Length: 417
Image 1: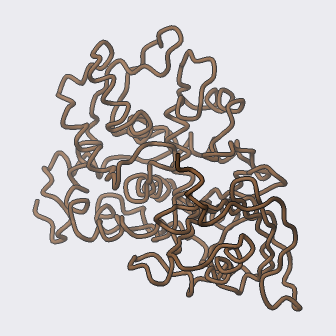
Image 2 (image 1 turned 180 degrees about the vertical axis):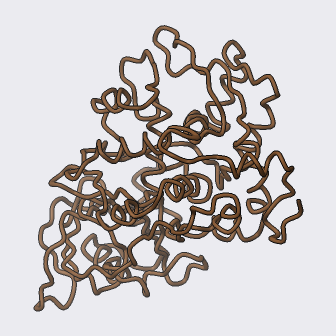
């Protein structure tokens, strides 16, 4: 049957029937909705402390959460990390990409907390709408660097799903015992992606008991009829220019991009997850800026620009301002954003048009101020707290100083023999 929409593939009658007959509930086609809800409940209203570097779930919480999954993963590792549990790692990616969880500072700790506004929107969705929201969060918005996966540039997750499917024959794909395959799936498509395919019901996975001192072990995988039909239905879109223009934009692009393609077969998909509008966050931002053994504490109004912050940093560290620079930090979804010197020819926003309060960073967030792309001076910039607006403050204010900063242009003759 030839569809009118250019993104609807030529499906066979059997494939159309598979899609139309598929019931989406908390147990079918996979356990994704049940396990995702378990993760939301596990985080709870108070949030949970996360690791300092990648903001992942702490080591001590992982076994408990895994035990609450519909199908817990069996591993034999003494010090497992989040990525040691591919099911949890995949669910964490979806959690961040939906915007349902945000990072907040609590003292010196980082807390993963549920965004109440997004949660209200999530609760208003039916199960079909939730399923496809999570599918879009993975295939369209997913950024593997959020879960400490090496991307090597753009990584189109649908293409990796499709390429992996091509390896699976009718009788399945035997992985255990094939060292080449065991090595390959760890990065293409990645253990977390295989776990997600299983959770979404796109493949069925037979697990094997892990070897002593080893992690997750996949014995054999099979494609499911739903997985084959959905891949064919969505293929044209993921090869289109429309997808790539969205993929290269921020993850704040809304949900529902696949709705018109999928809804003829899943008419229950009427509504989409709504993210709160990006708002300017005013206040007095108190940063601790460090370079080597020296640091300065700077307070600056949120209404001022990153250009003002850079000028202040360079002044208090006795650096001149004759070079290009760049601020980088992780946004609410967890991937890097850049605010660039006005003279840089980049698509990212410039420092003279981006206010501090536009960044939407929370206390505890860390930025890098990279100055002089030749010498690469890297200043660590931590937002310690966000105080109320100070009506008497008309510019940056130095609160504390410590240590002697390094010389911007050291006398290199002293290093000559």
